[in-house]
Length: 316
Length: 316
View 1 (cartoon, helix red, strand yellow):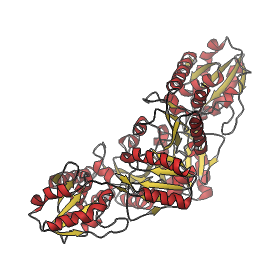
View 2 (spheres, rainbow over the protein chains, first blue to last red; view 1 turned 90 degrees about the horizontal axis):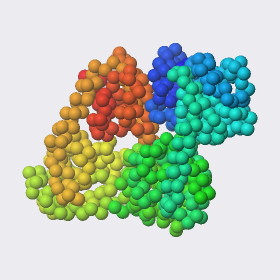
View 3 (cartoon, each protein chain N blue to C red; view 1 turned 180 degrees about the horizontal axis):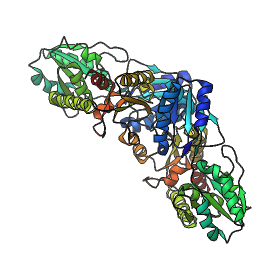
View 4 (cartoon, chains in turn brown, orange; view 1 turned 135 degrees about the vertical axis):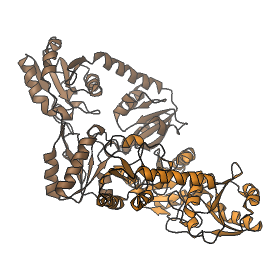
């Protein structure tokens, strides 16, 4: 993993901040701690590292930086179409230097039944897209990379955004996901409805996501049906910067009321079973914060549906 | 428990908000949910109830309210010298209607060795101070109530503020704490250095806090000594509104560096073992967020000292 330190240094030279806040996913914390120490030594700047969970582009600490008196904040490791967020947050890339050539070599035989492939990945492997495309083309495939859209760059997928793979579903026979994230690979499969293969450069394995996508899809539907008979809904607004869909939550609440159900609005920074426990009067929850919560969230004792799942519920 | 609903209604009539955010300690959530429903029905106002942990006067949601588009926020259950915080937060009292007369009757015999008593309590029992004072005076004691100071009202104590009991320690032979909070009663004992009795109106028991105060005091000293040999310190800035002591943390960090130790600044919303785990290079932590974290925090595997404990550390 390589942090784009050039970008960090460039901004520090330009802004000449007294205090800088750095945030990143937990996996990068040690590297970011080292970087922070070096910034203090080399530029005489005070640094603070955020120890809170950091979920993605939607989870910057721009307002916290303001409140802490930081002139600059670096959000490290979630590359996207945004290079800046808010008044003082600069997005800094992390490049994973994993080599995909061996796993692509292995994949070629498995991918033979398909001629036209769609290619996608998550932020830290985006710089590997071109060479992967070249290798697959050399092996005789036609390769398509979905155009960037809103915050997504070309070929990029996020936990809540699969537009780049969805948009090319008509042109391809199968989708190829570069990386080790089963969650994202299943998301590609579910959103595109296409055969999807995950090419993991670390274990050098190729995984057909079909079975797992089917299981996750069924679990999602099951959650929706579990919520069908609920009388009282809690509609949750997430409090992380990019999750704060206040108006959408109010709208959902009113739709529930029109359907003759009770609905209450709840705000929450992190949606966990423990924080929902005191709301004993509610039968089910809709969370507008992040679709991933409802997919990873088989830990909940009551249904906790995402917005698309709520839409499906209205359709029943 | 009675929420001061008159205050809520008065503000709603005055501000005529479209959206109101309500936050409260977990124990009041159901009552606050009921109140929110009634506000929606009776005033046609949209309400959101915060499900996040709410720690006290230092933990208002003023900025969240702004980001959510709420015109008004009610912080329920932490009475203090502040009646408003920030741009839109109104502090709303909760009155505990517990009756202290029986437990005071029981206490009289135990308190006989003392002539002059100091009286204090937490916010929800403040309205009982006068009648308790009267009862104790009728039983022949001289009773003193410490004057309010900064955010404290007369006779009030908080987890981080015991000025009202500390200030009268010279005039009294013992302190009497009204309520069921062992944490606060021990705090009164430790900060005043006086014999302290907790009068619990629910169990109708009188507890001499001496032994427990001694145990907690020893544990605190032990934590400080465990940190004496630490080479690398993490200095934590809390992210809750009233805990954000950025400058104090920077100052502490510099003092550690002057003492030849390494020190790093970390920001954190909630200080838990889990969130500190990734910082494996650090030997001990100082948290500037809330003294209670370090007192209740025997769950930490490394020392996590409060600011006063850090001061003691510099003295060693």
